[in-house]
Length: 351
Ligand SMILES: *Cc1c(COP(=O)(O)O)cnc(C)c1O
Image 1: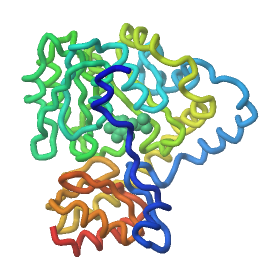
Image 2 (image 1 turned 120 degrees about the vertical axis):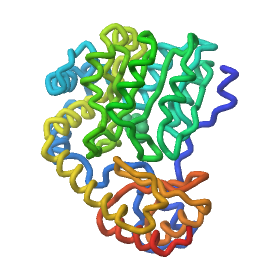
Image 3 (image 1 turned 90 degrees about the vertical axis):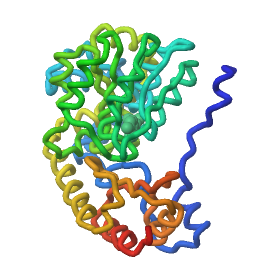
């Protein structure tokens, strides 16, 4: 076995609703608000697409998800040769790390961000530099200062999971102007569809100027298809060609491709999800207790407290499973009735 794997552990899911009910003696429904899924689910058209294609299950999917690639290519105005799909972004992050990193290489990212950048870098025996956040925000200047000749990948998560914060178009432009053009800067935009801020980066536009800026998007969050596993990267043709060698031939399932295609075409549904989420998000930020939250452009809110376990348990008692961190609790914005219950808990909680 690779020696470095000893310092990692397999992904630890939270307790299941059933296990939690038993442990805490809870009666009634428990809602999973721990992984930033979209509880409204996908467009009805995605479900129709699955039903319409269910008799094709005995066949392997078409390699490389060509129909979905073509649709996204047209809508975003990027060549199909610049798009690569994975079984979720998790697999995209794995493929990029595997293709690029050799022992002793360095990646630069932030502390308290998506864990898979770190995890996959360690598997490849690379060194990881995690620059501290500044009040919940990525410290782009701090990251810039860490980039050197050994740096092979820079991972930026915008908006950031788990804090929900973002950096602006101007800040990203300044950053890209200062990164050597041979260093890939990977922008994980898993939550981009929830963003309402006007100064959020237009990463596709910046890509025209900075060929080393690569973009990650997923169908798992706003599109409501986490169960089907579809994510993609938009990068240079050269990079995609190399990374595609790592891709398992049939990594994205047949029904996953069709459902994602139908969901992607239904932008009106996506828009309604964005609006519902923004309305509900706003109600949390109207609370006086919002001084304990990091600002959020996503479908989750990070609540800062030095008593995270107490807050987690109080939320569990009203039927909401959230995610506990050493310095706070991340709650996924759910249906209005659950959000209301969570706000009541927050209003009574002694931070
Ligand atoms: C959820 C998430 C992912 C992984 O998404 P999948 O496409 O479901 O693998 C990647 N990055 C961030 C920041 C996420 O929050």
